[in-house]
Length: 209
Image (tube, rainbow, N blue to C red):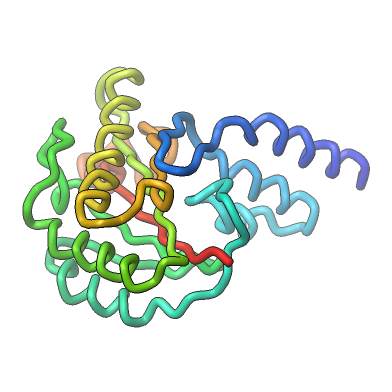
């Protein structure tokens, strides 16, 4: 049994290692980090917990280290709570900032809405103060429309966020993007409310050694 689990992990890592990208490049496809996390879970016996670790940022350059997110969380709450923007500190030490579609984009568009600027400014300011910080932006859609359309939209929305941060002085080498289309829903796509929740952009911030 141990041999089988280890083999599964090695296969999972091998298959997905070439799918993730860093340094400002775009990665396409779904669940790279989640799949590796699930593989680890098979070894330690808690796949649900391990899948959370790295499920958002996937493979990154450098080792993730601890960071005190309190200041940034306060600023995001101050500037984005009325828009539905929320933060979650994850077990791997990263911070997820969730932007619902209404806070960032009009339906079917990847042009940023001005209402999101104060929150993105807060992220850029924190990154300017702390050069060890990195960002991965992940775009998500609902399952309405073709797979190709949704993949393109999810990538373009992630790129729009990264381009905004870059325009505010953040080096491209500290930024990366991924489009996951409709492959990682957080709610039921069969309902209007569920589809609205699934249309989102997740910004993962993490510190490297």
